[in-house]
Length: 92
View 1 (cartoon, one colour):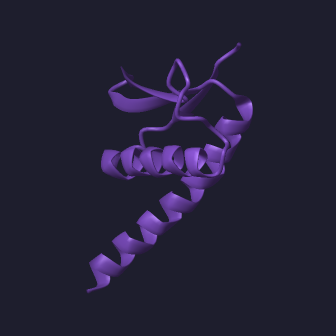
View 2: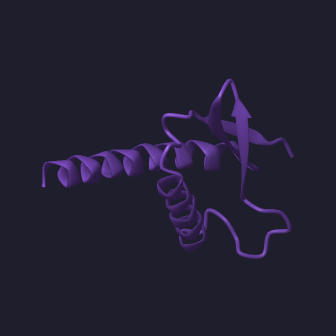
């Protein structure tokens, strides 16, 4: 089985709680929708932190290319929600 690595840029991962919440929500959705099973031997998603060039980046390791692709779509939506929340908080 090959692994799929998704790198999240420093800009995208500035709010680590948003990324962590998105990973948690995606993992829950994956189990509830039957995409993943609760009884797997290894984790479906593994997150690593990398510090390079003065910036913190996150690497997400998936066991399946389809999971990685679905997470990227999910993450784009969550980032947009996060930006909408920031904009409304700043204007208040």
